[in-house]
Image 1 (tube, helix red, strand yellow):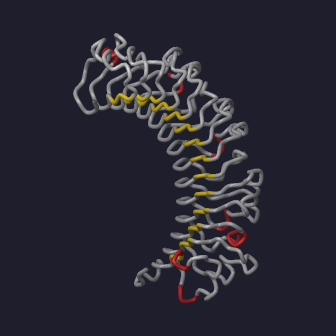
Image 2 (cartoon, one colour; image 1 turned 30 degrees about the vertical axis):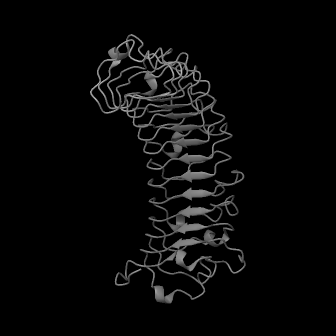
Length: 353
């Protein structure tokens, strides 16, 4: 029943469909008054409810059978102590693009959601992560907020969290508590892209597999910052930062040499291929395009003793390379020649790929 002009719901509107399990009322003109007489009470089998793009300012009375609730693009301004009472079966909750902030969310609001797995709070007005998140949570998305800090207390109980998206916020390396991630024993993917980092954040979650830091202003990766990560990062995305060769230390990538599969260093300020590159044992994808690399040395990418190379994709276009001067055996470790991209170069735009 999406995309109509529904404004009211009669109390007995759904009394004839007790087995209904999915209801889509998105993109209508429903407000709080439309749910004042609890019109969904007869839907004892309802599992999925979509109320996106309406005019609701609070969570209406909902059947306890519900497993998925979407209330994106409404006018929710608060989550109160009892707003989710009875919803013990809820697994997925989407509250994107509302008016919520940390001061308007009761620390007890999420307590009834004993089985909640996924929570989406994107495009709200949060300056910090709300307190009282359910311990069952596995996926938390809070991109496009105003988050300035990640405190030690906020995520303390989220021992099952696997995916955390804090992209498009105002975080920097000094705004993350020293113990903010340490209890997140299950966290595998952390997205901090489009924030305000100028250095690699410290004290990363121990079991992290994917770290996204694109579109920051990172110019420095300290030594041993990944050493404690086990079994090790598989994906590290550092595109669109301010990395130069001086910002990469000798031991910056210690802890990732055997685990890393994908390394994105494109759109930085590198003048040379980082020396660490040829030490990776299982790297499959390497992006160095859109830097300022002028020379590619014979063993710059491929180490002669790394005979079992897995490298399948290497991008070096839009640098300052004179392709004709690249040593002929510079790319012997590539498993597929079609995975190599060299053209165009910034000083040789007459070439076509």
